[in-house]
Image (cartoon, rainbow, N blue to C red):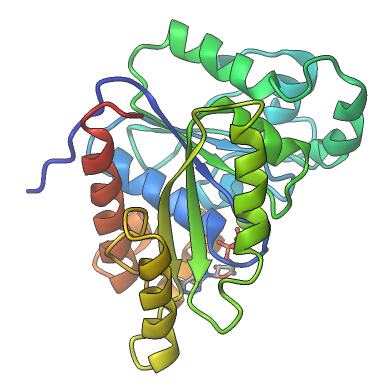
Length: 270
Ligand code: ADP
Ligand code: MG
């Protein structure tokens, strides 16, 4: 039995990459599920209007359901939109509904529009000292929703797909992060980079991993996430792979990645 160390203070992990389909949601959901299955208390905030993370964790998210829309645009407390994940005891989800799809536009005229998520999280943590991790699943863009996540916490986790154009787009993401470091959130850092859809049979996958490791030796997580049908299937059963098929290669890899992250934040730099 492996012990996942509990962080001394709540840690906010923002899964972001403006590229779609790189494994942000799959990673946010399964890292959250792995941490929670190990007994840590995890709240996942879904801020992608597609609501894929909400679906994957079995949260109700039809239009009109209290969601991150009410939190961001109406100042609702996170506790009022929180749903317990049906099959994992220590996991909660604040869902996204299609209501959020208008938020990028609606937020433009709102005061302190970059600080809405930070304010919600700060309030929530102050009232709920049991929280260990807040995991944020971002939409595939660098708009106001992702910007809110970059302001809300210091730690960005970047999933990178092991494919030919893997590093394309990474520089614009890093530039966006630097801009925010210079202004809205000086604590912002790339806390971890993880390789997704790794295919051990191809040289390309290892080359991508080696190249990322050269540029980001301290950030690259040692465990790549393999390509696995079980990972892609799990959401259609409203489950993380951690409960859907705990012995699959995908579940094993996400538990390892979650442990790597938990060990990094055990010292309290979260
Ligand atoms: P993003 O949130 O970055 O858009 P997703 O996590 O939704 O990416 O992944 C995109 C698609 O790839 C989804 O259909 C997902 O099920 C699938 N997928 C993600 N990771 C893997 C993997 N390791 N193996 C197989 N399929 C995967
Ligand atoms: Mg997604």
